[in-house]
Length: 478
Ligand code: UTP
Image (cartoon, rainbow, N blue to C red; front, side, top):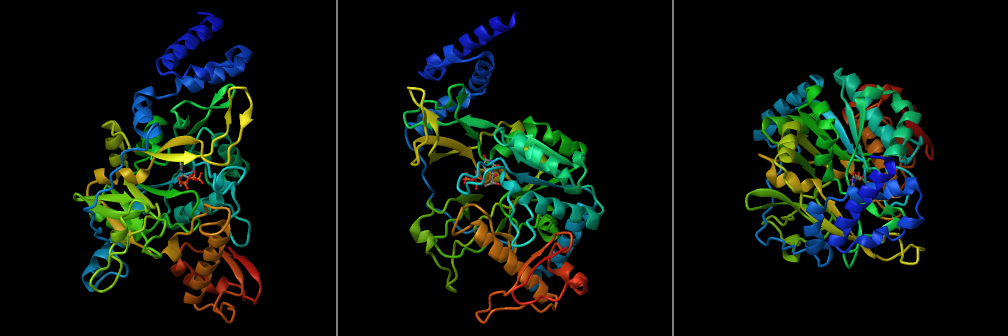
């Protein structure tokens, strides 16, 4: 078949599928397009998983999904810190087991970095954002240094998997290459792409981002499971003998991906998927709530948690539903394999967003208010399928301060402040004098490189290398 004949037959096949669904408007500009643009448009259209979307358009786009939040929720069982006297031996054994698992090469890191970061509005992959309060280190750089430090500490070739999306893959790959993978072997930094889904207007019609491109968006961090398998990354994990994936988001510079206690408890309790939880800042905090429903661990979005449950108290006055989800998980490789092999269809959530589109006259419209529906799967929706899911409570100030927004809560500014606060605490716990203002806030700006210390204990060992901290000063300690 000649090239033009094959383009013609692909066009006819696409047209037939689109006509069947009343979506042929996306071929409106076909006659104006050159060969390369036609190729792009056909490829976009051919990528549409109609077998999923036919149903989702009816259930999630044309109407708001019928989403009944269970009333009979109960709080989950959470492993707390410090351990009770009765748990002390278990925690000690878990730490030893966790270290052994890292040392024997059973643990790999996974960063999900396929999001669009629209709230932050940074021009480039979020991982390339300079995030430290001093020293100008980027998120990817911090994670790479953390992995390098753990590889050194455990003498183990920990690989790093990074999920990108087709929209930011090339830029991410170029960025990491331009920085020479921050000294990690290139073969141990594995990038893989997640899937994309089309965006729809509120009438369920496909949108064109350009005359020759559909408006497509990444299918959510829940897309990571399918993408791990489809890209071959899961086979690669198996070939390397990895058993546990330590999963974290690209936007959290405080994350501790190699936490021996978490990894050890996960393995010792036979958990297939584990989650760190943080106590909530207030009853209505905008954070997912880890709960139990029908004997299964589930995450209920803050806007879905009934008010009476959000405000409910235990007899001692403490908050009853107090397990916030900072999106830090452990997943067994076997579990991912099983879930995907059984074709489990992750539930999709609807998000109404402002999406730029080409209108009927061919002009680009850039709405500021939501005009479109995006569909996303969330990783935590797989928790109910996991055997023995384990929840470990951690101190938010130590492990979670994401960069999501341009200003205010969860912004670059708040994250830098939290990074500085943690660095100061680590130094003080090691006996270093940190200048403070009369109100107790640090009077110094500090960032501690992961190559210097992965936790407060490491700082104690190297404290003699810390320079004298002068009021008003700024120091990157490495
Ligand atoms: P967010 O939910 O914060 O979304 O992602 P986002 O796309 O980064 O930002 P906004 O909502 O457009 O402002 C949480 C984490 O999940 C990853 C993100 O990269 C981030 O690490 N993610 C999100 C993906 O990897 N893929 C997705 O499709 C969505």
